[in-house]
Length: 121
Image (cartoon, rainbow, N blue to C red; front, side, top):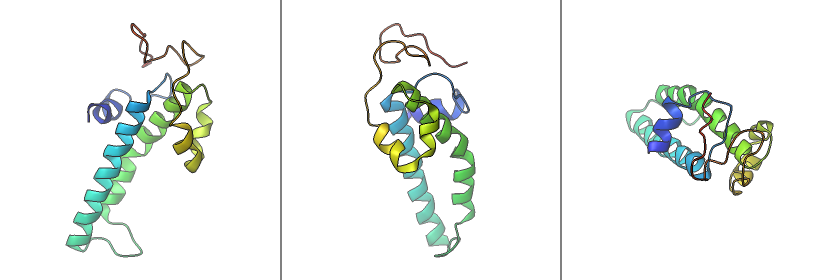
């Protein structure tokens, strides 16, 4: 949960630096759980139909779009790839599973290493 809060507050639109697997997957998990809970609430209240999304689902999508894109780009940076890979939906799920590129790469120091300098600017 702390990764979700970190991404939504401190790193909301940060496209620089690197994101560990844990940061990416915990953020993704929390967004998924929120989406399921919201969908169930909307279905119970009759706010969503089979062909339209409810207002809460739309709000969640709008609020999490930029942070999701940002953490995905930083995750690609951590694996040594360009952030452009993040726009390929299925491929990002596969590439996000890869381990961090060891040492410092062109996007910053490895966040796994001790004394790594955070790149939040």
